[in-house]
Length: 181
Image: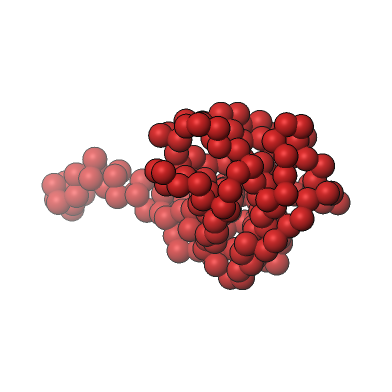
């Protein structure tokens, strides 16, 4: 009698859904308030976003994460003493600091004139003290209405040509291998 009365108040499908939701809440870390994401996870991946406003010859660059995480350090350097073809020897470039920020979500900087080289890095440290550094080293050249992008390190992926009308675009930064790039 009591079981039948409870069954009327709590239908089996309703009880099943409630139990499933409770299990998901306890088993899914994304639903619970947790600490910072683990270093090296997709949530900490950094990217270099490139933009060129219409009619401008100043490249606008943004180093940011795929998700809103706080980087311990974001560093950006720019070199203007570059050649387009042949590509420059990185050791011969004169770098100027475009941005050096600590404990930030993103960093923005500009690079005037073409061709120009950009060297960026972003270091993330998780709550356990584990650190990961992302980096990119690219040269950009504007030819007509096309922005050409070339990596200055063979371990970085090639990008190629992008019509200015298709900007902005983002480059995922590479993880610094043990011993440095």
